[in-house]
Length: 236
Image 1 (cartoon, rainbow, N blue to C red):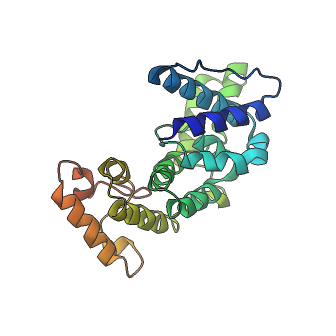
Image 2: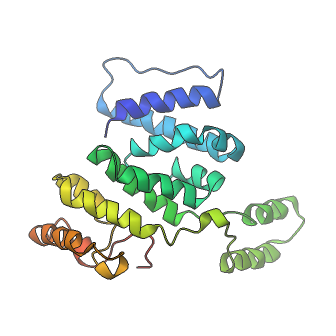
Image 3: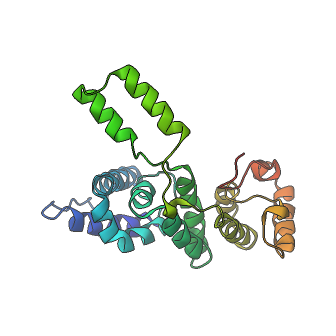
């Protein structure tokens, strides 16, 4: 992962969304651990700032979305605010497009970010219940019952319906898995797509056969893919 470019892009974004904030710098001889910690702290601050202001997130979404292709997708810090502000569908549509274009690393990062689109859940209703409890408007027992009801009947927006999009993400992930020639990236990708051709539109059988052959040659690396324990958007 090119952490230098991601760090620079996050610093620029943070200066825009928190004007007046002094721009921190690392010494030229900073080691890898210092750079890693600085990147993590910056990403966290950007994510928290966006999560606290969905309107701001909408305004800067065109600048935040491309950052997902630079990040390795190990955290939800950039994805969750985007999904909360824009909806699952616009974010996943962007990631599917980028999963089929650019460097192998960028394609892989896009596929990894899609995981967080899958697991994000709206907090609509929940935050109000918790606030009412803290203010003493309702009791904790009443809050527990209301929260259980929210969990049983989650709030869905039109922009959160994405079941029809997952096959396109799987196809892009499988294509990168087959062609990238990098087993580290392949290990990152193996959770993103299933090998079951029946889950894809017609015509993907040969691609999935090639993916299975690669996985069969290194079962110690790609055991999850071979065990049918993969595929974002699938109830496993």
